[in-house]
Length: 244
Image 1 (cartoon, rainbow, N blue to C red):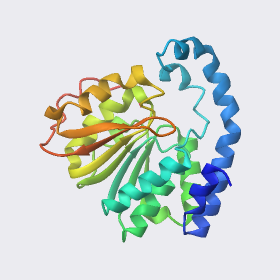
Image 2 (image 1 turned 90 degrees about the vertical axis):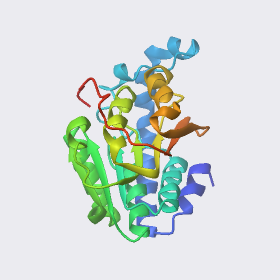
Image 3 (image 1 turned 135 degrees about the vertical axis):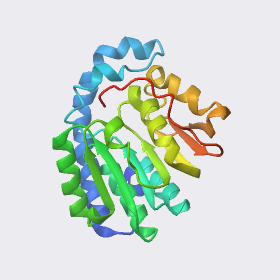
């Protein structure tokens, strides 16, 4: 049994486990297309500059690009440890990571996952997958620009999965930050894959003046885990309004 199979086998809910196994396999079959999209940027990788997310966005518009099972289970366990009732996700895609988050909210006794997805076809598939998992009642997926759809969150946020296109990660965090309660966690995927695009993000969350304790997790793709420790951010530093 491989690593991913071992992780998925630990999911107690057979309905969710079966669906996630299928979706991760479908995502794996798409990986060749992603590899081809990234080949022109091989020189950047060899120079240690990482990939340019902007150049890959068009190629990824119909791809799963989910968290791996180990990362999904990490999100589930972190959300359970926080007894999270309100979770925000930037970059819902086909809803694979959303399933892990919704499972945590359900197992915590109820609440809401607020996801945002720019591509309508992806949002529709995500809703379909959540219904198949029996978790649709715990999720609201907002279609459109995250800098618009996440302006109203109606209450404190316990956990934020920041997994949309990396070049927008800091702007979206600054929008969500005022709603993060003390002790809330933020997980940003792909810190190692997109170091150039996330450099400003990493510098910001690692600056204690912004109210976070933050550090890298050496997962399959390095992720940045940040904990809201103090203070309140008023969002006034959001200077640009790109479409995300």
